[in-house]
Amino acid sequence: KAGVTQTPRYLIKTRGQQVTLSCSPISGHRSVSWYQQTPGQGLQFLFEYFSETQRNKGNFPGRFSGRQFSNSRSEMNVSTLELGDSALYLCASSQGQGALMGGYTFGSGTRLTVV
Amino acid sequence: KNQVEQSPQSLIILEGKNCTLQCNYTVSPFSNLRWYKQDTGRGPVSLTIMTFSENTKSNGRYTATLDADTKQSSLHITASQLSDSASYICVVKLTNNAGNMLTFGGGTRLMVKP
Image 1 (cartoon, each protein chain N blue to C red):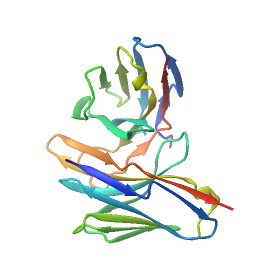
Image 2 (tube, each protein chain N blue to C red; image 1 turned 90 degrees about the vertical axis):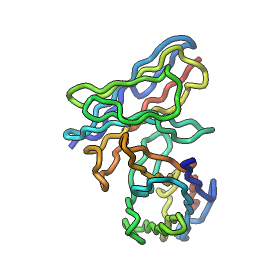
Image 3 (spheres, helix red, strand yellow; image 1 turned 180 degrees about the vertical axis):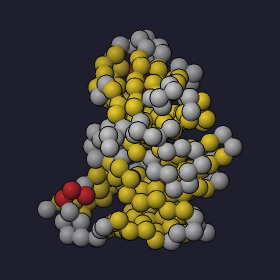
Image 4 (cartoon, one colour; image 1 turned 45 degrees about the vertical axis):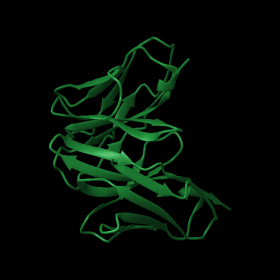
């Protein structure tokens, strides 16, 4: 059973540019959530999607957006990149909302560096 | 405000020794608490998941405890190995009308030395 796949693994972008990250969840998982991890702030929740709908959103500016497709794959977009957006972006998939014991399986992340 | 606090921030122990990591949380409404292990440059990997009714959960040499009254959890590692060197993250899940949200602790960075 394939795990959570995130692409690309590494990315270097220039300030002001925009970037799109991709996440393919475990087959059968319908929920995808995104997180930002930095040395200073640790792991922070960005948003969660279930059945193509954003269900929860963390405290991030509107430059951070996402979407989920009918096959449960998800993309995250960051526009007008800032130096502070440099981070490891992780996505996690789970079987679905309301699954009390549903495990969250994380991908290996996309390391974004903004220069 | 939903918060998860972990201690210590970092820890160095000798191979073969035991250690205990702490997690205090103020998250509501509480759904469950998870401990994850994260190797450098990799995504977190789940170790244990506990609901409010569970006091102890083991996974090999890892044993997690939960006191829902005091809102404290601990992760005990027995007979540490060099491969245990990693960050250990306490994560509390809350479920509200909008859905699920994970709140993360800052992690404890464990280094096991030979």
